[in-house]
Amino acid sequence: METPARHAKNYDAIVVGTGPGGATVARELVKKGQHVLMLEWGKDVPFNGSKTQAMGIIGTPGKNYTITSDGMIVGKGTTVGGSTSLYCGSAYPPPIAMFAKYGVDIRAELEETRKDLPIGKLKSELIGPHSKVIAESARLLGHKWELLDKFNYQDKCRLGCFMCFTGCPNGAKWTARGYALEAKSGGATLLTEAKALDIIVENGTATGVKYSHEGSMHSAYAKNIIIAAGGLGTPVLLRKAGIGNAGKNFFVDPMVLAFGLLDALPGGGEVPMTGGMHLPEEGIMMADLPLYPVVYRLLALQKLHVKNAINHKKAVGIMVKAKDDLGGEVTNSGGVKKVLTVNDHKRLATGYELAKGILERAGAKNIFKSMIIAGHPGGTAKIGDIVDSNLMTAAVKNLYVSDCSVIPEAWGLPPTLTLVCLGKRLAKHLQ
Ligand SMILES: Cc1cc2nc3c(=O)[nH]c(=O)nc-3n(C[C@H](O)[C@H](O)[C@H](O)COP(=O)(O)OP(=O)(O)OC[C@H]3O[C@@H](n4cnc5c(N)ncnc54)[C@H](O)[C@@H]3O)c2cc1C
Image (tube, rainbow, N blue to C red; front, side, top):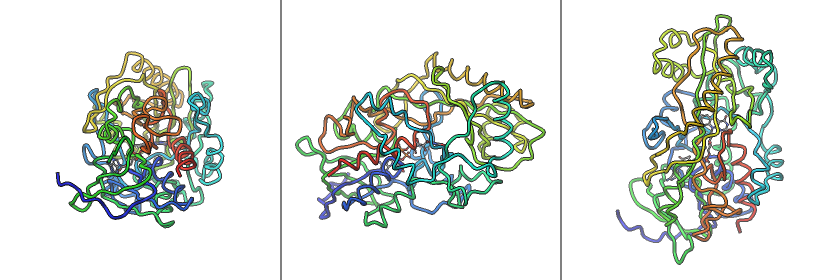
């Protein structure tokens, strides 16, 4: 590898990655008048909702998805906005008490975020027949199935499409790309297709980042370095900075999807995860999941359910997400060695039985369970272990982490709103 020359330009902060963790810190630092460089491995293209674009964001092995040692697929959106490009847009409230145990109070940031972003339950005109039928069936069975908060500009949202999953072309779904572009228009430099490869550490203090861009190696320097490369990307960079214990004992939030066929459904797309329920004691979270046709068909065919695969219009689905036991190791190249425990499988099985019951009560036939998918990897640089309550690494000064990696315990929840709050809090104390 060519030795990079010391870059003439210095910054107040370099932020690696523009998912919700990174884009939020960058935007807040720019608002404070700081000179910020954002390095993003992916491209910056306005979302157009096309399959081709979505495949570019999530279709390349290693860069966009990984298969764990246990055979689970883990998706990672590699573009400006990170995985929020393709997320379902659910704004699940952060577990305030869990963070308080680690000296992290994010109540003020939660309030600020609720003012900043379009967070709320969908208005009734946007709730489609798929979500309604599941909610009704769950409630008849006595479940506490409720509308979930969404990150949606509801005046721009249209029923009848599945494009939350492929990048909403109507701009109805808030994504972290919005914050990254705000940071850029406020004066930050956004380098896309710029992959951070190493952290420069001098006398125990992080001073810069080495990265590849347009076919050559570069380095940039700053007072503070913030790694926000996601739950799997961040530990790889932390190890390069000499933090060898990063990337161990983490969670992947495994999910199974339960699908059936319901004749009464009119077909057509709608917003996923409109309603759901959380069973903290059981370590399960569930939500309705009208799924994008191609992905649905692949999941059905993978389980040899041909009748389901060819009847997408009648498909009715529920996502079951479990809080898995911490374990495993991220390899130096970002691979995932993680085997689910017996208890993890029990949680998923309990959730699936509940989901199956709801689908059956709704009148669905041909119910099947998908393969297990890893939802959101994190906890690879936990607060209280790798980083302190200010999100600075204990081993290297001025090196911070702002993404799913810092979550201190087993999780099992949609993390985006939490990451935005943590990013805002971090920016407040970065001078
Ligand atoms: C299909 C799907 C649906 C989801 N639905 C929801 C939902 O409804 N609600 C919710 O809260 N969460 C949801 N999630 C999860 C959520 O999107 C992620 O947990 C969240 O985006 C993680 O944020 P992050 O900042 O940790 O990482 P990411 O969003 O993954 O961002 C990391 C960024 O770093 C960049 N990067 C990585 N390595 C490097 C490097 N070396 N150099 C430069 N850049 C790098 C990546 O390109 C990426 O842009 C969903 C995820 C998926 C895949």
